[in-house]
Image (cartoon, rainbow, N blue to C red; front, side, top):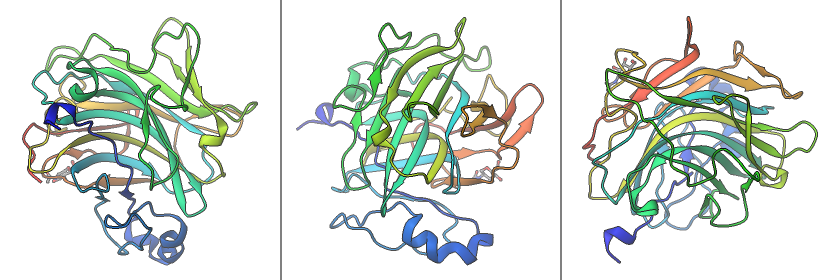
Length: 312
Ligand SMILES: *[C@@H]1O[C@H](CO)[C@@H](O)[C@H](O)[C@H]1NC(C)=O
């Protein structure tokens, strides 16, 4: 199989890490709060406590490298997320590289987490070009390979949706000149229990579809917003976001999540004023992010990204 045929998957073998002041709860988090798989045999193993940077395992065959610039919540009773996500192209991306951003819900199910997510990525191996595409992704637990878009039963698109999984989105932001974004939400519908996806940046909120409730069983969830890259081992990483580090916090120069809101049990979007957010950046010399802060005209916001060429 040539590189062109290799689908770069999004592994969810995240090692969520918790800041040192959670030392007292690390034992229980190890038992039910960490997402991890032993690379060799796929079984759960215990994490090293007090790890400051998140660590990513690979696709189980050890072929994929994944890096994240993420902010996530602790495990808890959460009902969803909304954010404006900047749209950046990646015109020189290679077939073995995947780069994008997503809002994610990790749902505790026994000792595993299932994942539902929606976002945008550039994945030449999947789409045979470098368009920025809307995507959805699900996995049932940390041991199974997941499914993109409509590859298997999972996300159910709404009829006549303004954006369907796999659809290209434009325009893209241009560095130093213009930023474009889409505002997406993913939240548990209080009536049906399904996880509904809306796009909010059009004339009126547009229902894109839903993940059936059984894909996110249980009541303990982790909310996450992340820039990500995936690429094959022994190659180099693609750009993340705008392809620039987020140092100057400029909407036209750095990728962002802004106006970040979390949903309550009644389906109301609220500012995450009292929500403790945890940083997960597993390769900061390649891909970094800013603090999770609140800014005038941006709401709760963070910037993320990094250049082409990451090694390792
Ligand atoms: C990553 O970003 C943080 C916060 O902006 C900064 O303090 C840190 O030095 C950066 N790390 C690297 C390796 O550039």
